[in-house]
Length: 265
Length: 254
Ligand SMILES: Nc1ncnc2c1ncn2[C@@H]1O[C@H](COP(=O)(O)OP(=O)(O)OP(=O)(O)O)[C@@H](O)[C@H]1O
Ligand SMILES: [Mg+2]
Picture 1 (cartoon, rainbow over the protein chains, first blue to last red):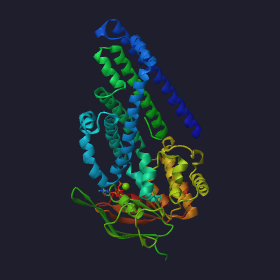
Picture 2: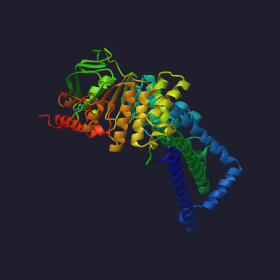
Picture 3: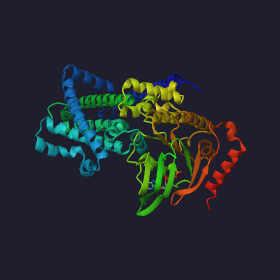
């Protein structure tokens, strides 16, 4: 019989070597992508700016401070909307999963609003909430909320009956079952919801900024489009992509910490 | 005679399945004495789990009464420990944290809790794995963890639903001996469901064979073999005769 530290060290080593191989593949793939982009640009495809031209423009925008103002405005909107949306979605999702009456009352609304793309709410939001920060943050919140609420709700109704019974026969009452079983058991679902919700927040942000904003990456692209300034459009796109990626990685990291107890294939 | 630890009084339990009544258990009466080990065998779907769940308080009888210590069962509680076939460990808790669960609920102070956890892990030979997560345990180790978790709250009754069903023959025999070993010391009342005729005879004072549709007691076979039981007993002619009787009762019910 092997001892426990042995098993753990071995799995961890195996995990690390797979991770390294994956990382190398990721980098290689990114390099190939950049190379193809460079080739396409230099072959004169559709006036496409090359990666070096875009990088130069990004540096100019950064040096003048515009890039930071824009990026800050965008990230702020995404974060506020995402945090609000998720913070609302998790308790509502728990409520829906745990209490039949809450599910019956809330689910029709959630399902109905889910069929409407949050972007379609923008005109209405502008009419009711004006053109300041509020309507933008509102649609982002809505987008993140709708994704996370469904995920949390799914998490609660998917909690293994046997685990709940196991807790009950050990003396757990309703509130203990909820705190000690339902919450941890639905954690993986919630994190999946957060990841998808973050993606929804970003995609809603750019569209919201395209319509009415004084600053922000979406607004910058909108301006650049008027002058046919492809380099700026690309620079803004790349920054959005990189920031989205960074936040996504953060949630993945959180996921790894909070739900490493899961059996994974 | 002392009053029974567990008493089924004309118990029945029906389910509605697509507007059709399924009589999972129909009119079962059975007394189980304090400290007795009773094993329950019978074809799949004959109501064994339903019968046990009613003692656990996870299922309400639709007729009759289930009494533990003379009082009707009212919901689940730590006086009746349950061990499920699917282990039912909390995957986010380490082995020690799993065993501590019931003690946390009972509000046992931390120091006393960890002493009890250590003692229970020792009892099932899992001390070296206290810090491991369930996903890193073998099936046998998972089930031993579940048994330790049940022991930790010191239940008067152990309800075991095919606890060793998913394990290999060798591990199963080890765990059977471990169970009897612990029983020798604490004399808990044990109701044990199994599909393994050998296991049913080896563990029990009494084997109850059930028949299906509706679930009912088909035969009661007392096992007049002394404890402690060991390998020599498994190979004895008395054991073989008992096993054959149980086998016939299970597989030739008509
Ligand atoms: N929650 C339920 N809803 C509807 N029918 C049920 C439910 N639980 C059990 N039954 C039915 O009751 C009958 C007895 O089920 P039970 O699980 O007690 O059988 P069992 O003897 O434990 O079978 P097995 O050996 O396969 O575990 C079966 O016909 C089953 O379909
Ligand atoms: Mg069963």
